[in-house]
Length: 390
Image 1 (cartoon, rainbow, N blue to C red):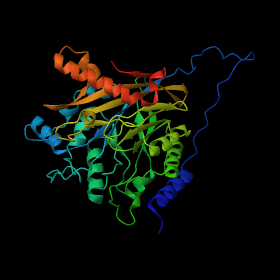
Image 2: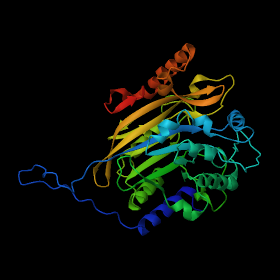
Image 3: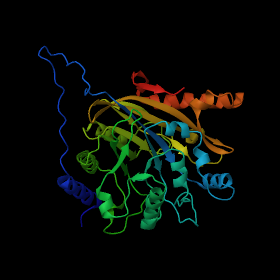
């Protein structure tokens, strides 16, 4: 029997063969003396496009209980993310990582170790400014095929794109491509989002449906990225559920796979799973953020600071030629999970506000210092394109 990875690669390669060839981009012309020609009304004006990625959305009972209080007995998840909504809405494309499957509307709801979260979380993410979510994680198959279908149905109903799992084999063949409108205007830009995980905690997809969720495999990832390009994607973002839980240092698997970003078909890697903030670095001109930490979670009691920390990673892309984009700046926005009420705090915004008490300011400053140190674990602060918000 063919393995799930073999089937995935064959599916992607077959689709790539059938896809229309990408259009060639003409090289810039020069005058006889080698200088560029004078600008004309039709000369290319560079545009910029921003992509922001958030940490793990891990829906423990304390998370959905807060959402029920916020909704007056009904689930309303948007207030949980209200602190980071301005940053999400300020980006051209905002991508979350929904780590858990969603339950039927009436439940039952379960937390760790086999998750089943209220489906209203999807609408809360959309209302907060997210445009799509990666869904390949070690919990993707916690509720089997029904959980995968429910999760994708809920995301679709909320207007969110999803990458990393599929309801049908046909759906699994096509990369998720968002049509993004840059703040500078002009034609929408096709941006692909891919999502892969190291495993499923021992759960398996139904026999014959190995395409239902994407396992990390270099050949399959490269094939899907190439297919996304052939289908018109001008930027390709890869979400990776990888690493060692609660370790701030990237492990051997992460470091070994980070070279995927040097592929001509992959422009950015966003990492999840460790539940703590990890380092970032630029490889071959492209950014890798190994671990974005937790965006929202209720992971331990008493609470552990490192599991309350996260980052929003915002990457700017510049269109250097029509349809050709290069990444430039990476900005990290440290986040913090406040407990009463449960909220995601944008630390840069809060520290610039007069609202926090002096005690809260001390807590927030300490969190920013820790997070900045973790992100700089591989020396990214020396890169002129790197910055920390606030």
